[in-house]
Amino acid sequence: MNPTLDHTMMRVEDLDASLEWYRTHLDYEEKGRMEMDTFTNVYIGPEGLHEEGAVLELTYNHDDSTYELGDAWGHIAVRVDDVYDAYEELMEGGVEDYRDPDSCGGRYAFVTDPDGHEIEIVQRDHGARWSIDHTMVRVEDADAALGWYLRKLGFEMVRRAEMDDFALYFVKPEGAAEEAMSIELTYNYDGRSYELGDAWGHFAVMVDDLEDAWGTLMGRHAEDYRDPESCDYTYAFTRTNDGHEVEILDAWPDAVE
View (spheres, rainbow, N blue to C red):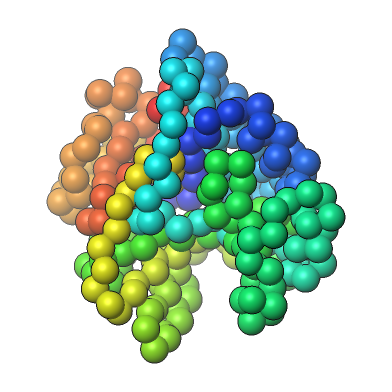
């Protein structure tokens, strides 16, 4: 499939307010836009994004929908040179104080955007400033989730952290650049279950050949959720064992809700 993690999609209730927030505080610029009759998709990211870097897709439905965050999706994480300096900059810019670096052991911090999506600030020595480092999702069975990503998508585990009461597993396409986004699988040992909500949409995997990749996924018994034919052969969707939607595309989508 030769996959690349292309973007993470979230739904917003006020597109102008969301765009202003990301432009003002994360220096994001518009990378692409799709205006449809019932919704608008805007793709944003920082200047100087690596060729394998992922962008953020903001989806605005024109029917004034409201959304529930749920807890199955966790956050996106963005890269900075110094987490303390970056957090102070955000506070001075008027961003609400959510979880400062001291409360996170000095290793990271969190803010929220206008729709309540959590954004982790992580210190990295690679990638454009504010570029997406990873997207975090919570999983109910770590072994099954890792098997899904490694077997279905052909990803590899690039980092792991085993704690007393939870574990973190970071996966991305084999051979992906350091600057590429990864997916963080968070597994809590207490056996809890999660609600997906609808404020988070999906993450997208770009492939060389959509129909060939879809055939591979079906051969590996991935869920046939929205096949290429139902999406005008521009993209398709499957779902992980935890129900997280995964878009498969071989070009920028014509329409994604």
